[in-house]
Length: 331
Image 1: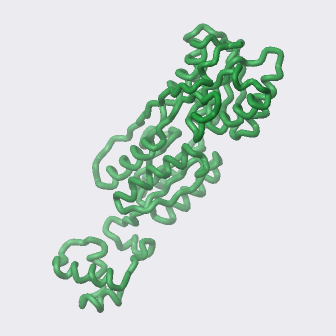
Image 2: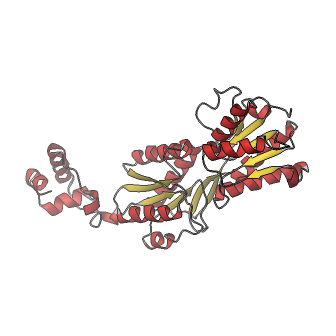
Image 3: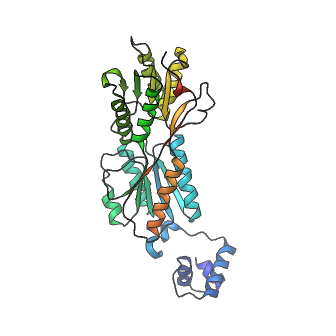
């Protein structure tokens, strides 16, 4: 900074005021400082300067997603980055891996970096770190999964309605022996999707005893093995509602291995790459992860601008995309 000051012919404190956009600096003086910064290719140490910066801003956000290798999460990541770039803000991202301990550590790391705001996916039953963020006046928005507290913002898919739509679609095509393959029910989205599944069964008068439910699935391999077992049972399902995109991949593998891909109907929750290129194409309830990420980041920047906004739960609608697998009738 002293080299910038010498080149601009001003004091170090003046350079600091210009960089921190403080008032009472003459326009021509500020122009000389910025010219010196560009000439010297000077880069401000945002971490070191954050305590001196007006408002304590570091122009960074912390983003915690389920897993960066999941297409849904990576699209949220991209949306947040696109929005942050428009505001001149950098994004630090981390994966949750559905581990509450990992969640706590990631949030602690973000706080040590003094990020200006947090966009989080949660696996914890209670987000104990919220007392720390509230004490700092730090805006927090949860995405994909809702927090225990209603005092913070969340932007999530309408999971229950989407699951009900998927199940009702299979019922309309004549199915009653429907299997639900879903994630761990301690995860809020999995619990909501199971509720939607039973909502549709109840509306159609189908008793729970006629369906099969397999929980605690989270990857393709486990889901493939689970469905292989169901297909080998005396009364195998004629239709599958797979309530997570990686589960859907396992379902498709099991059906292909059994030669049943054209005789067992499938509707998956969440779209995935190449779903429309398979034969038959995979019918899905599609979420809108880009919109989720965009709405969450807009919420953060509204709060950072000083706008007073009441905490809100924003539900993003899903949509059913018919491609063939969900339109097969019972055989």
